[in-house]
Image: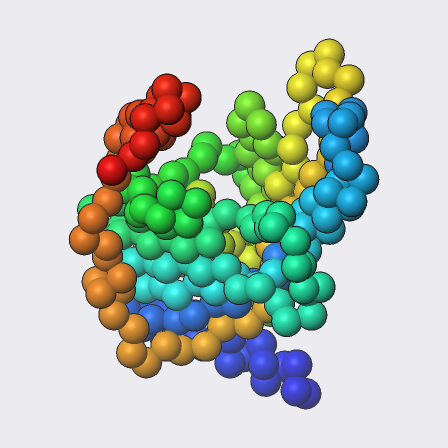
Length: 243
């Protein structure tokens, strides 16, 4: 009975969500990585073990969304082992604001302490004939691929909204489950394997959330960031100190 009530509540919430409400969606994020040491044969074993542990951590991802915006935020689980080393590898996106009215995304790059502005990313998908209920929702299976990854999605149709914990956005759909697997390069002897999964676990109504306040005042394009990094590297290599 409790499960039935939960499912009914979630289904009702989705209907209300379509009427300009703002909701927060919480996803579990899991990653499984088998790192081929042949990629870095001289890497110390201690560093190798730390990197493997970092690439297998679990997280949660919060997506706060309405019909005009979505905000994606990575949340580290408390039960993750505390890594006291200087090596820290977190999955992306860690902070991402999508403005569907302007088709712009703002991605915070903490290594450079800048906000990167770009067009909202999408990918061409192919529907399969498979469907199933997840959390009481009717979902359909879609597949996609690019040069680096293969994608497997379970999506729920939802008006013109896009709710996704990834950089990729899907107009008219809510991501309920997603699986991403890296492709092995042709003729490559490297056998590193990596798979990440996202699973929607719950959603709640967000009574007050100001997306526009999150919009950064200073941004860079990818071209501008590349030029800046090239300049920094040139100055470093030539021994010129940055002012």
